[in-house]
Amino acid sequence: MVGKSLHTFEIIRNFVSKFFNKEFLIFLFFLILSGFFWLINALDDYYEQDFSVELKLAGVPKNVVITGEVDSVVKVTLRDKGYVIANYITQGDLRPLYFDFDANSHSGSTGEIQVSEIQRLLAQQLSSSTKIVSVKANSLVYSYNYGRCKKVPVRLEGMVLPAKGYYLPHVQFVPDSVTVYASKKLLDSIKYVSTQRIELTNVSEPIVQKVGLQKMKNAKALPLKVKLKLYPDILTEETVDVPIETINVPADKVMRVFPGTIKVKFAVGAERVKSLPKIDGSNELKHDGFKVIVDYKEIENHKTEKCNVYVKAMPKGIRNARPVVSMVDYLIEQR
Image 1 (cartoon, rainbow, N blue to C red):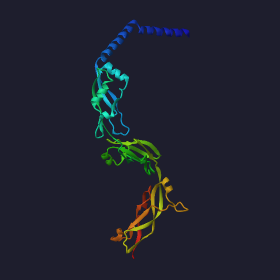
Image 2: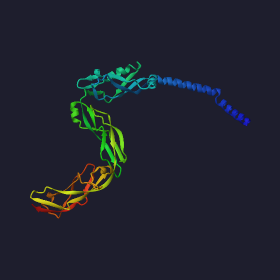
Image 3: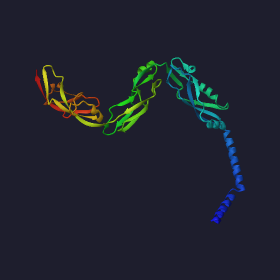
Image 4: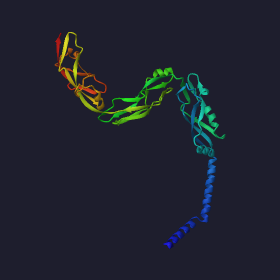
């Protein structure tokens, strides 16, 4: 066993000595040396590179609300020799640039950061040989006011679809309204604030999640996010006996319908049905909140044997209410 191990070691040693011979080591040395000189030569060329720089407003008074923000980050293109650009890259992001609020604000509740000022402050942290080729930003203008605001409701932007056999009694936001800061003219035109677009399908379980609000130009809503609450409920079908009312009957006539009550079918959530009023001593529902009518004007000029029945009102949370029969008998009498 020892002999075999020594033989294997000898084979490996011979292979290594042949591979790492004098000629190979010389070749490897000159290969590394040439690569080093190539790198030095490459880094001595000029390059352009994009960098991100944060912009921040400093010294904003406590009674001032920024309603329209400048870009928080701008893209700058720098040109210099490769080793200088490489140094910027290895250092990470460039330091944020701070701009004094008073120095950059104008009359009329607006302000603007000049590109020349960005270049001036940026140059202070760059090598003297570095050239700023360009500064790219969507907006360097901001707006502000001194606390002028109003409360407006929050509205859902998007689509929420319950699962089959479920329905959503309502969509709830907490808080249900937010404070919007803007100029008087703009505030007068803002009636509500929409959420960022939401798409939820097949909802069968309660959902509580934070949603952001859509940004508005030159206006700011606080808080920036609200809590969305969805409580889907299982749909059940119920019936209730409702008296039939007559409408538009002339004072000198009496309109009688047969039968005087009618069953109304409707869909309702399992939780909502628990809160509907019931007849004492039973589980039978009261007709409170339901209204079923027949209209005298429909048969005034076109006499028919029967008249149509309509559901004109129903309690909150009731869906698809309809009479079990669409027509009933009637009788017109003279007073």
